[in-house]
Image 1: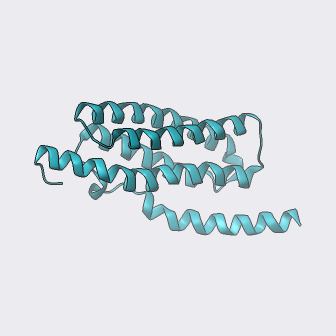
Image 2: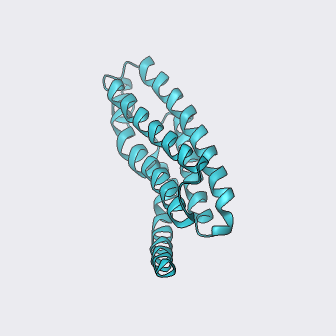
Image 3: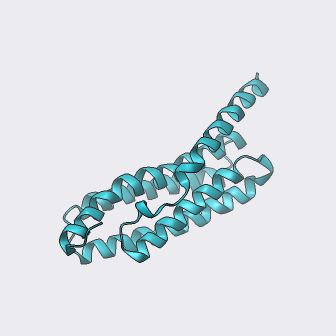
Amino acid sequence: MHQDVSRRVAALQGLAFHSLKPLLSWRKDFEIDEPTIDGQHEAIFEMALEATELAQEPSDDGRLIDMFERFGRGLEAHFRYEEAMLAEIGYPELEHHRAQHRAMLSELDFIRRRLAGNGADWPHQALVLLNFMLGVTVGHILRGDVSYARYIHEATGIDP
């Protein structure tokens, strides 16, 4: 039974990893035209892409966990920078955006504690890490950050 479940999970993982690769390639049209933030976003995408490759091999589980830790540290630094920049320009939705960041950091902390306690087997552990990383890259960056990108462009008069 366990082997059958593992086989089905592996098949789903393979499909998801290969179909998500094009989504994780950084493109110029993702940029918000703020060089530091664009660089941070691109680095976050690159780490998520590397994680999808590492997650394909159970023998890379240690490297995947290391990648996740690096991703987490980068995300924390990015959020600090982004929030400071948004405060500086008077972004009216800053508190809402900050609340989104707090929720993601809370989830990040939960996953870290779970990994420290070895709370999951390999396929499940890899899927939890990837789900979080993909939610941040594709979900938050491409959906949540669009609103402040529009505000920056409207406030500065620069076309995106």
